Structure formats: C-alpha cells, structure tokens
Length: 456
Image (cartoon, rainbow, N blue to C red; front, top):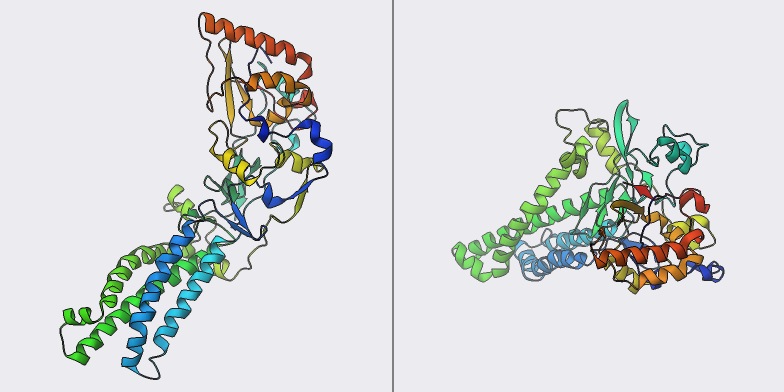
C-alpha cells in the first residue's frame, strides 16, 4: 500500500469481538437466528421469521377483522332470520370461515422463510472467477495488472434458462452470484429466491416459498370484500320490502350495512386490482419485480411455459424446504461461522438495534467502505478487512484512533491546510509507526480470501 492512511474506528469497541477472548468464545454457541445478519424478527425460537416491519400485521388484521366482526354481529344474523332455513345460517358461517382462512394464510405468508439464500462467508474462490488464474494470489494478480489494481469479480454473469441467456448479478452483501429471478431486498437485507416484492401489509418479502400463500391472502380478501358488499345490499333490499320503506329508511334501520357497503367498495378496488394484477403475473410467469424492471412485453420471457404450466408451477408444485436452519447452533470454532456471524461479535437485541441505527456502518458489510484521504490520495477500505485491522496486536493503536471524533459514513478526511493539516500528518505518522510491522492486510495476513486496500 502506497502512502500513509489514517484509520478511525467506525464502531464502538463493545460491538467488536475481542481477539484475546477467542479461546473462551469458541466454547460458546448461539442459535443461527440469534446472530443472523439480516434485519428479520424471529419468534418461537427461530421457528417464525418476520420482516423488520412485522408490526404492520396488526394493522392488517384489524382492517380485516373489525368490519368482519361488525358484519357478523349486526348484519349476518339478522339477514339469516329474514332468509330463514336452510340458507340463512350459511350467511354468518361463510363469513366466519373466509375470515379465518384469510388470517391463516396471512400468518403463513408473513411468518415463514420466503426463500432466503444463505450468505457466503467469503467471496467465491479464485478458480470460480472467469479470467483469473487460480494459482495466482490476489496480491500477485494485482501486481500483474500494473498500478497495483486488484482483480475484481465481474458484476454479472450469463446463464442459460430454457435456451435463453439470462444475466445474474453479484451481490456484494451476500458475496454470491444470485440465482435467476433472485434479488436482494433492501428492507430485510437478504437475497430472496424468486423475489416478487416486499409487502408492507404482511411485513415480509414475497418470494418462492410464500408467494402462493400471498396470492391466496389477497384473493380471499377480495372475495370477503365482495361477499360482505353483496350481502349488505341484499340486507337493505329485504328491509325495504319488509317495512315497505325507501332505501334511505333502510339504511337508517341498518347503518352498519351502509357503512360496510362504502368500506368494502373502497377496499375491493385495492385488493381486487392487486388480485387481478397478480393473476396476470401468474398466468405469464412473471414477478412484480420483473414486470416493473424488465418489461417482458416485446421480448421473450424465458420462464413462461404457458398458462396451464405456469399455474401448476405456482399452486401445485411442492414448496422447497428452507435453505436456512435458523435453530441450528453456530460457534466461533467454525471458521465459516466465525467469518460470517462473529466478525463483529454476537449481538444482543439491544446491540442489534443500536447497530442498525448507526450512521457509520450498516449490515451491508461488503458494500460499506470508508474513504480515507492522505497526501491527496484516496484509498477505499473494504469492510471485509475489519477483522484483519482489529488484530490482537493492533488494539493499542486502534484505541487511540477510536478516541477521535467518529466521522460519518463514506466521509473523506481531506487534507486541511495550516495547523490542521500538520496535525493530521503528525497523527498519521504516530499511528503508522505504532502499527508498523504488526498489521498485515488481505493475503499477507494469511487470510485466504481477504481483500486488500484498493486504490481508487
């Protein structure tokens, strides 16, 4: 690395694993959901997984169950008496059954793994990188490229789907090439297989493992709205016939029916339009993300196999098992688990909340970088090198850096003329001299897949 760099700790020491306590930490184990780097919320010991906005489920259930309770209590039983047997009792029973089914599929949509792709502990191996000699180290590749530039993963790769070329992107957060139709959800911070969208009403991503339940939820909600809408009109019509009065008088006799007619009319436009849109997506084998981003109109869709086969794929094909065992035990003794989950130490619920709200670093670890400027040269430090930087022998020097005022994320510490500039120079010389030979980066530190400083 050319020049001198001044590194200031982006995180408080309480969030970092202490290298001196490695021997004791290796004995301790945690469940996967306890150290999960996504933003999900887990319940029942990791058996239920929700998105970070799971509280919106309460609002959704209230918007469904409150008008349903009004309908059952003030409309359905009165209408059942007017209709009489045998059809009368079916009016409240149908509403209750559809409402219960609606809540069940809502929980199945919101509380299950939507198809999260497990993260890699490190980037793909050199032999997996096209155009890279697997026998050459990253440092050697950078030296061979001239100017100290390091190799980098290609942002996209071409794969064939049904004889058509489909580009797949590399995810810097999960350190993997996403499978076709997979995308990274910025809300949950996970790569989701067959990603459709993140639904705020269910508080969860909609993906391969919960899309059919999501479709059942919106379609059953649409049916419930239309059912209540129609039955309330029938109730008002029978009231006008029974009392030989006008429609306004009938509404005065049953104000709940009038309210529910207006409420379900507005709601049916929303959920009904959503159901119609997703019916079109199912028949053409598209996702919401693909429809809005890629626009298959005018070009072939490699996943479209015909309406019948597309319907069978969505509703009749078996749901694949989850790729993540959130109840599994992970330990620092496992190198992959140590690199993936313990790189910043196991987080408690309080630490996790604090970590998400910090402006200097997010869980998008592979994307986070800190620009350090010295002698008019800007150097980008990959966040995956934090484990190398916080070596046991470097704690003393880093303590001095951590006492300085923390700079915001992606900040550039420009050279300040006069006394401020000389102060930075002196500080840099002291830190560099202290770190000196004790700190190594990337491959030089023995890290098989580390990334070195990259001059940009």
